[in-house]
Length: 264
Image (cartoon, rainbow, N blue to C red; front, side, top):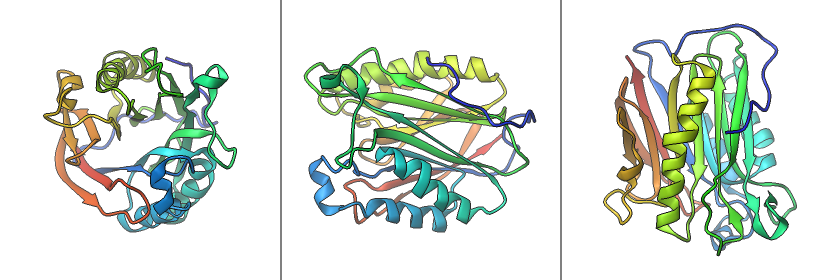
């Protein structure tokens, strides 16, 4: 686990998510590297489409895969800020590694760093934001892209994590998923504090009932909600499931996956 990348100046501390108040996560794989074949239907327009999803669906946190750094820290941060004026907005990005460059950041076609991101909001006051992330120790050595994980904590209120697991080997994808859920996430939660609620969402490149089975990396005390394909949402049992919905996307080859839970 890497150390905190940054923190807001405020020293305010708040306990967990408020009980009974719905909390919505939207997971999106935007296929915006400019390199993958799915970009041919995209042409960069998936980012604008994602901004529209944010404006209409009003999530608390958005997890993002196959994006460029500027997509996260500029375009979609601005979309969140415009949707929720006056609220604290945070955004963080974690590049994938480039094996051909000794693990340096993988690059989008436009030269920007390529990887995963999180954009979130805090509804009450201002809290410190901490980030954790890195590359997995388990990687498919036949692939140039080295897969990464990212978590961001909003004070003691909540932790959101995302990842995009290996697409070239189900065995490696499952190993990475177990590394995230059994090692990285518990370490982040311990660093932040045990009261913080936690959600994990991403493109796991694993299917429920598949071989390997996405359910195989769900720890005790957690549950999973999938989009019927490779995108999944995981959280702890004290976050009661409320609803989920696949949101059609025109400019990427994945749906947006929305899940709402209610803290107890």
